[in-house]
Image (cartoon, rainbow, N blue to C red; front, side, top):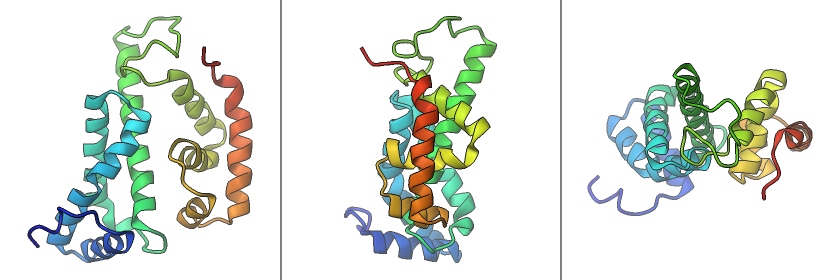
Length: 187
């Protein structure tokens, strides 16, 4: 399939590639990974604005896609599933880097989250708030991140998570109320 990666694939084409890849077609998997790499990188950059960190997270996301393609159920769009995989990879990369910084005493004790980051520009207050939310209300993290960070519609989120749109809206609303007090005002 030479030249097929030069054009932007439609969502239907990506779904078809994903179906074929899920069934064991290695060429389809390669084409799929090439086609979705820019999208996965954009998701990772939404969490990790430093290019090298986002690239690492993107690579991890693509490895996860390749290794877990069988877990895509095919009910919703493949791109919605990809967003979640990339988001989780970016958050995992952030956690790993934060833990390394803490273990190495690289993170100042009283760091200002708006200006200090071991990840060159990531808003630590947002990521830390999401970490707290994940401990207290893990079911709300994905809807909040998919809606507020990536701008996905409530309907897309509901289809991906297999829950009613009203439930998605309620979870996002409640998560915003819980996270808001943890965020520092922008100056």
